[in-house]
Length: 88
Image (cartoon, rainbow, N blue to C red; front, side):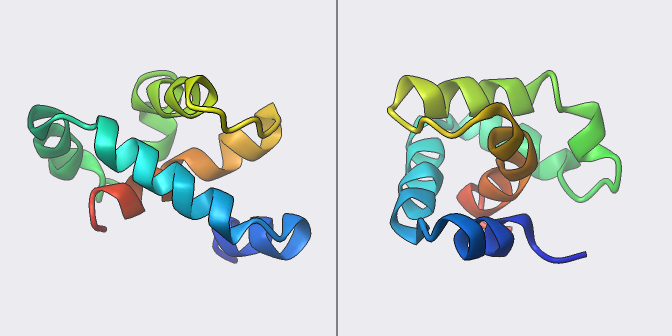
């Protein structure tokens, strides 16, 4: 499956906004959150398990910081943004 961020860039042409989103999440993550995320993020079911947990936090944090993508874009991008923010 293609990377959702690559697809988003292809359709919307917004690499600067994606870079901004990754930086926002990186800045907002506490060391304790990073440790917890790193413990679970390699689980193949992490994205599904955390959709309404960490995923909701990522989506809301981005909206609060001016990222105004629609729900479909947010749902498809939050996991990859989080992975990049924690260095995965």
